[in-house]
Length: 334
View: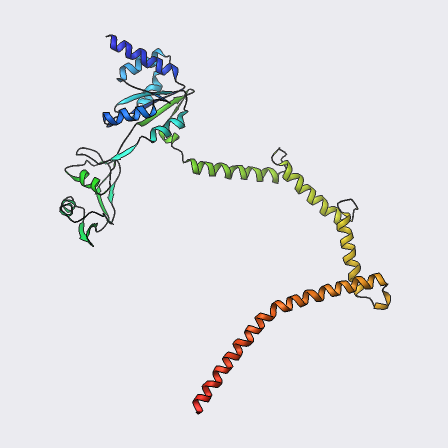
């Protein structure tokens, strides 16, 4: 049939043009929702829906390994092709993830996880909903003018089938467990197949991990003295500080060490002069000792002044306590 040949030709062109290829599962996506999703993605990726047999023919015509396509088909109930030259595999996953949304379960749907109803105030006004919830095993009652779930309840175990009005009632209290959207089955890029679990990355945690690893690598490189453009400034600063310390300890005179050595010598001279009799000092040393003594006295005065308010407060508290005791005795004796 000509329409099949046209479909295979179109699929061949889509497969050949894309740098990143993917298979998605569109099972359960309503037609009107599918149209909106395709419209939102059209600028960045091509989506083609076709039978598996036609997809296989186009894939082989494009010179691709059929085993790769079969791997991408795994888990797909109603597969569709995705082709893009703008996105890599991780970006394809992120964009398709945005199409996912929950919907209330219908009879016959399978619970993807344990369906747990938490103890809560539903905010719904009193009405028949109370009896309806209790009829499916969800403990509900009216409290404070609204419907409350009295305790946590497992409505359905993972893998069990929804029956009757359970899905509809859960939807009324905000539980929409059936996820619809363009579910990615896998991508093929540069000869590598990526599964959804590989592409599902917590980017914030990934960023923190990269920062931590970079910091650890930098510290290790500095500790083993590994010279790079990043570690050189830190290593030079460390070496400069260590060299200055050694030069000061050995009293080696340089432009950098001279101010430190003079300061140390001055302090030593003042210390020695302070232990000598005043008659043994010349005028310059005596003046320096006097200046040092004045500075020490000024510092002591400042410290004393800062301590005075605290001492005054303590004395006032003691006087108040003593006064209170005297008044009590006076009252006792009239």
